[in-house]
Length: 192
Image 1: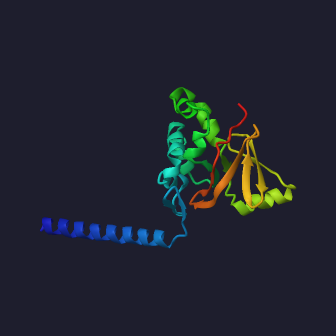
Image 2 (image 1 turned 90 degrees about the vertical axis):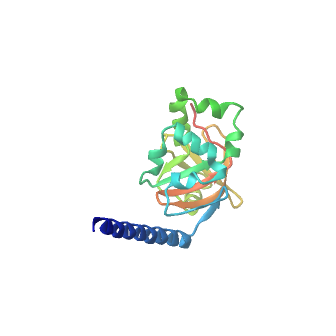
Image 3 (image 1 turned 180 degrees about the horizontal axis):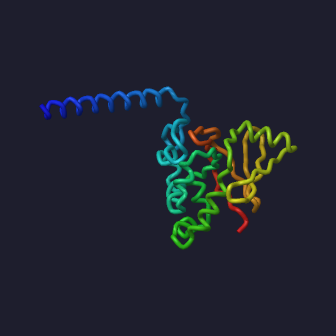
């Protein structure tokens, strides 16, 4: 008798899992996704859950893990993240990424990564409105305490760091459950 009840409970649990899993997959198929690094980015997933699937952001993901910022970027937010690609990190002087990933440089790495993050959910249109309102350039405070300057060149959106280095937004408005990602082609750096 007990074996029969255990078997029934197992079948019920399995069918419930299949139903819930099928519902979740069905819901994800209906979401409006953006392709980044060969993977669909789902608005129902958080920043980290999506970023780990992008082949173009493996360096950024490794840096976020090394800096101990996974929990922050999985939290409720909302956050706006200017996410540098692997190619953006490759533009840094040789050996920079490897040096930053060392445990003794964790604080510096955290500062650099937090410089790419803004508190709030700012879509490209919101940033463009700020630029227009501020006569062509908008200052944006990062969670690192530094400032990025947003501006337009034609129809393209750019951010400039405190050192004068410009980074182009190559994919805008990648919606997340806890904010938005804008993919950028250059790592921006705070004054250190």
